[in-house]
Length: 143
Image 1 (cartoon, rainbow, N blue to C red):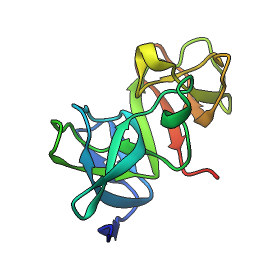
Image 2: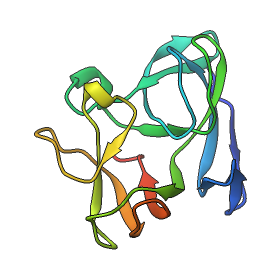
Image 3: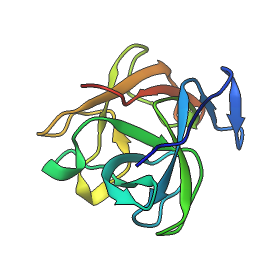
Image 4: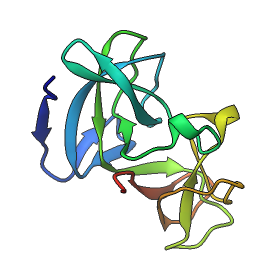
């Protein structure tokens, strides 16, 4: 099995809402994904790693490494995933710069939350605070 990888220049733009700051891989979506969802490795599909929406309260969906989907994909389609990403135009109200963000639970699989759930898994930090134009740094490669 091989994993295709490429390194992007900082500031790579995706629909004006994120900036990829790390390496990017080609994976296969194991289910329907949308841009910005946090994903985990769930197996192999042909020559690529298969990914599913990650969830902090499901043991098989919270193991490192975690990645972020760079665009939407249907189950079985290829999807680009990255290890670091800055998401902009998100709601960070109630937080403070530097506060951690956490992987969401299965009910909101693939998402992140400001308040730690019972099974807290830190996936980044708040970079700016605003109800609609806030930003967070996703840093999912942990081990």
